[in-house]
Image 1 (cartoon, rainbow, N blue to C red):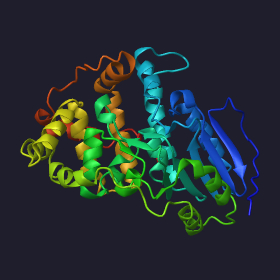
Image 2: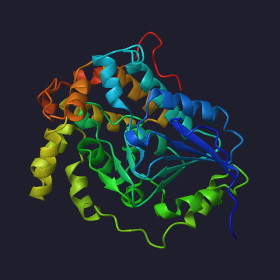
Image 3: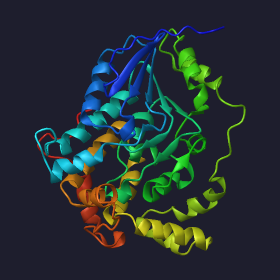
Image 4: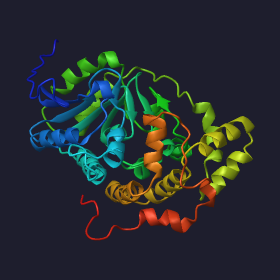
Length: 365
């Protein structure tokens, strides 16, 4: 039976967020394809305005326009220029406001009453992970590319990274967070970062079918998505590496991980990963390790509050701006970090990033 799609555009093609009704579902598309749908403050404001009027929908389907990316992350170059070349349109206050609004949006999406379906089709990194990873229905495709590359930029695995990375099996969370390794396609399902795998060519049919659901019922949505899954998932491309990852990235301290890799039974794996870690921002490595370790004991809300404490301190430092300058602006890839060696950073220095914010500046979620 052919499904009837009711599609009424609520926003113009020039909007950074496009919306349409598909039967009973609300279809939301991030619309900055030339910027790989990078998240910025105007986009966050548009999304919140749309969500304010979304309660009548049975489902909200979130995706990215352009075919290349769901969302490649936050628009951190804009944040860099808010610090280095501030303007009336891009003031220094954006360094605080962006992350405040972003984490609140992430929590809102995670706790929506309509069932949130995240189509992780294309690049899903950083801020894009925050909008999709906490959804009750996460769908990967053959185009999916997942990564948390923040350590290379002097940032950290925010957007609730301590929550979802700490809960992955085989120490994959530490591996992905510290090394920035990319997972693709069905690997997201195997790793526990997505719930379903659907070919991208089937997504429009899937969206149409979801639009026939008449209640805000998670099981109904899941049962429909299952109909579009292949009988057998593609193989987990790093399955053979799990026996190297788990012993290499185990330990109660970052120093233990370095030692594990230095003395790894698979010498190539150990040395290759040591090289990667030594190319990352040293302070970022320490913060990410501590964040994932602490995050395992916290719920999503407390993880996002922890992230906000960390990011406020990072925005007061120099590493993030140095990382963005070298990797994304000048593209020289020779950053000068505030610390030369991750293992020589005192734990007391790391702990400062996790301290409660004073003067009622905590994230209110």
